[in-house]
Image 1 (cartoon, one colour):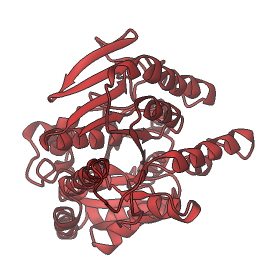
Image 2 (cartoon, one colour):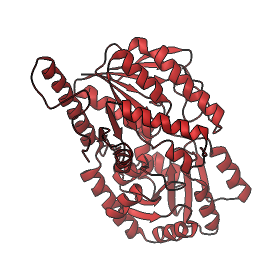
Image 3 (cartoon, rainbow, N blue to C red):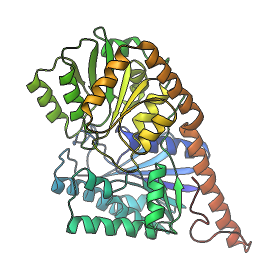
Length: 426
């Protein structure tokens, strides 16, 4: 089986999409399949190309799989015009430059967001006569509307039309959460879907993998260390952490550490400085291989969202659960339901600063409470959210569809067509 993974984001970039897709590539390669990664020159989330990268085109090896990198105009700006230039530059280059090096794949899987990359995925699938899989990790444009990025008008209507076009043209639509799948099925009945949850590598993220260096990095003083590690973007609502740190400025038992980068980090730094907060520390983004030790060294892990975003289940939720850390999830919807159902942490509604403050005080003052939540979180991660299980299930599904096509070409009757023969595997 030959498959192309088509994404704007990929290692050495850090974040949910690079981590998840690199694990998928590894799983496909280990299963004996031929994988080509079509991605951009690495630039995320800093908004400039990584050292050593540049130009229009580059070929690399990724753990035995081929990788094709093409030009992107990078930016960290949250402004609409600059973001569009960034997205569309890779849409264009991935088709015009990358398409010549993809061979004849059986499947092309395109990662969304960015929503516009679906244009390139669709064109490539028609060019290569491959089955197109549209992978939805966030429901755009709905998420953009809820975050205030898109307002009612022409841009929103155009984005909604693009979304509908992709769903109806894709051979299969995969989604990272059950809410995403249910939303697509309700709005577009008959569109074949497959639940491909994010999950976590439970062998890497463990309670016992903190190191002396990470403990020293986080615990330079006494007290309870509250960690946020990830993108500093609009969706995370990290201003809630600033406000809570202000509320707890006189309590020396709690210290906040924010690790990462993104478009709002500079604003957060200025706000913390303006308020004179000494109980919050900002650290640069760290390579993914250091994250298991970092999370395991924390006492409490925050997983925040700015508002209710349907289908959003941050990957850092699963990582903290697997590391056996006490969780505070600032969210509603599926992410909150996971934590509540498995008694893996505390749920606080977005914007509830008083609730967040009270919850942090409860955890900081009760070690056994933190330990109990961490134990339940680890148990759930092991039994339900191991990423290797969902990847193996997806690979088996693609292999089955490939066999059906081969049998059909030989005149053997199979229960298959040009699209998958079922649309519900939740």
